[in-house]
Length: 113
Length: 109
Image (cartoon, rainbow over all chains, first blue to last red; front, side):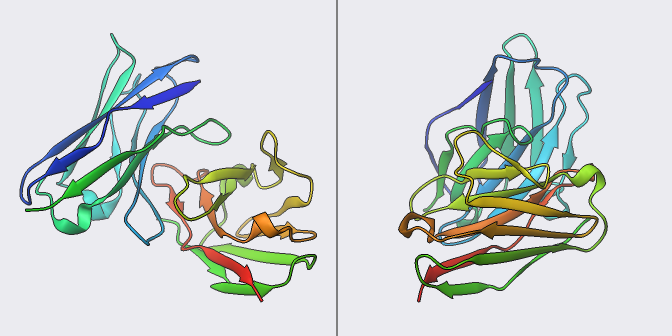
């Protein structure tokens, strides 16, 4: 299994960002794709997950109302959109399957005016 | 939501010493689905242990994990210079919300 994420993004405060995670190998529909972020100098933070075959995401309470996770089964790609961005959303965002599966390479999202 | 508490926050040891890191959950973790990650500055997290006690591919046998229910331990039998890093525990056994601990930093005494 390999997870390949989209490239770095720079956004203005108040805008949205959409990060993609393309899954190759393994069964796309059956397993959770989780999103984890790490702000500079901070710990790892679980944001939510989606099982593509079920389509119903689960989000950490902190991100409810601001995050949307979706899947495109035709391209084996999962998307994470975060809206109403603030400077403290600056972080590396990872997609990941449950251990021992690998993580994506990470996507740096910078929120700055 | 399960809350993971890691202790100590910082562990100061010398190379060759034994490190014992604790991860305590606010409730029992189903199926022992507890993982440990190591992270060095500027690097992505690296999986060490999954399923509480299974070493990931390529992980030296000086790393071992144990525990069940709400209490888990990562042991590094003899610290090598490259082991000084931050260690996170992660529970993935109690859906639909999964969590990480705040981390334990192992630094050189």
